[in-house]
Image 1: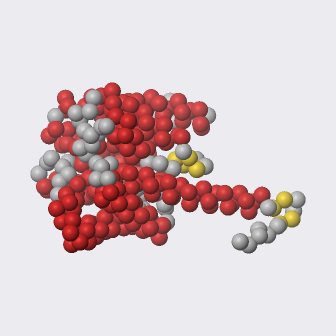
Image 2: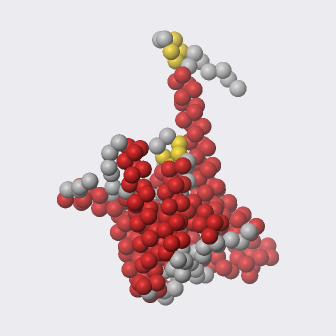
Image 3: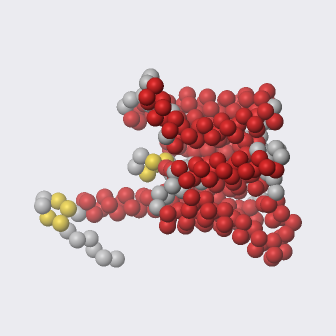
Length: 285
């Protein structure tokens, strides 16, 4: 597969191209601070395995070779969230889990689960991997949080997902504030300092807004964002696991996938009732 200069320029301006550039901008200072020798093996392993597995699967599904840029982004997100102390072999396996999740559960042509979130939760359950979210810049001086906020907001604006991240962040921090006043102040304090603030902003801007797994309409985005925040908060309170945001997103993904399946199933049922030039009205329930 080759790409012309015009095709490359068009890809760079596309949402996936812009997202790649943003991840690069965040990776450079984060890796410089954490140490390239520490972060590069896991990051390269997650990205490499995701691409190698996804490319032939796309070829088999679509009938032609295409750029596995979705796998690139999935592996990159995994590498930025996994602890850099995780062995590169586990990072590679996590990238593989993400691609398996992407292709295993689909409604029509769209995947239901966010691949990176599914991979990270699966890796935690199987390998007990740590999540440091080092790519969200939590170890850099406080002003660096603005870089995560601005780039995440830009990505959400480019994808027409601003209502989604606003809904999520408002409900996320409102629930934390209410719980703090209800007697959980010490536990809720974690949500308002590093790395949890960086984690929430990175998650909202770059994972929650994944186009295939989030709704396109603003009204649905408001509900989806609030639902994700509520599910994540419930996991935080009940389990306290490091994957509470990712787990909440997977719950919301399943709910949104069910809604899509119902719409598709309903459309097919209505279509199948029209035959031979006659239209049969569906029975009311």
